[in-house]
Image (cartoon, rainbow over all chains, first blue to last red):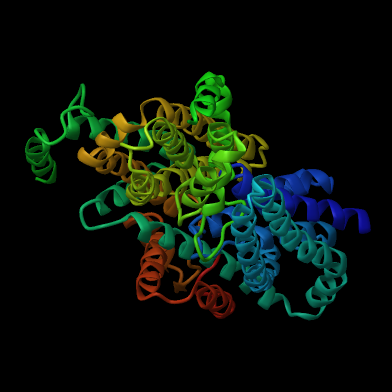
Length: 265
Length: 278
């Protein structure tokens, strides 16, 4: 159990460093991290299913800058505990939710520490100790992030198992099923959050286009993704014409508006 | 005066310089802070350039000034951060060459001018479109138990992020000024946003229809099955309606945590009375 807790904690370190040192390659997302947890705990299938479920629920949750919410840490703990306790896949989200609250709390503490580190850099620069200033950014910064993700995940995985097992044994089945339905409902909140960042009156039709194609045809989402890229390129070409659109800046602006009106009709 | 440093910077291999901006970009959030956000990352990304430009001890004041300049407020999508670092380094070189004619204030005003548009496009490109497409493909494969799902999702993300960061850094350093005019004068940003929003929104529409098959077990007698009627008119009408309700809550600005906890409560109730089911 100790060993398991440590490696799952390290998955959390990998998760946070994705956005800190790899420019956010989406390796932090539940789909990826839960699969890794599944591989490490010897249950790839459950890892994949929990990953897909958690990813779906949280897809709309973006953490841009300071605002927003993500359940990346919670998903790792949820997946690990689902595998070690043999619970339902939906239980992962029920575990991830309180973990997310704890994570947000700890993040606030880490924010204060990093602010101090920033001032440390200012001081080093004033003293002309540039190497030290550089080191604070590239070593201490990621270190603070890592510690604040490793510690809660380690303890949650280490002590969580017994707690989860006793909860599942005492809570009636209809509540557990209801939590499963609730977990799926949250997915729609995610979709809506995602929508709200992109949609406006003019482009709402593309959302409905994607929905209608998928609903009536029964195509898989992969097919919809490919179709959407094709349509995006097609509409872009129709709207902005071909050739050197980079060069014709001001002169072409009116022309584009005309074309845009045509499309609206 | 600082010709020696300038020479060292000019003779330093191009790809090694680009590599510095590349990692500077990817490490953009290593020390994110509430005061000046990604300022230390910009400093780190350009620090090697500054170290080369001002090697002599008597140039320390200039160097310190450049470091201070690099620690101003900064925020950008990491992948595009490499472009700004490249451009910033080119401008620092120019300033080192012509300290009398080049106004160093321009470096930060260019940084500030690029932050808004590049972050706007960057977030909708990487978070809104690439991530959504990569993950929706990944989810649908993973749901079938295929490990190809997460692998493909990783490959798509990496395959877009890596070249944009690398060539962004290179273009920023070599031709940054030229592109600067294009970014601020043309409606290039609007165009990219348009393409992103079409593809992104369509995939979200597809997700609503494909990913969460919520149905209603409600029936009034043998002949009146609510779900069968819905399916004959508009399949997946319930997921669409749920998205609409949630969209309303998002627009109202309800806190995510309240909605998440509320969903659990509502889920238990609806499940108990047999109104909705997965």
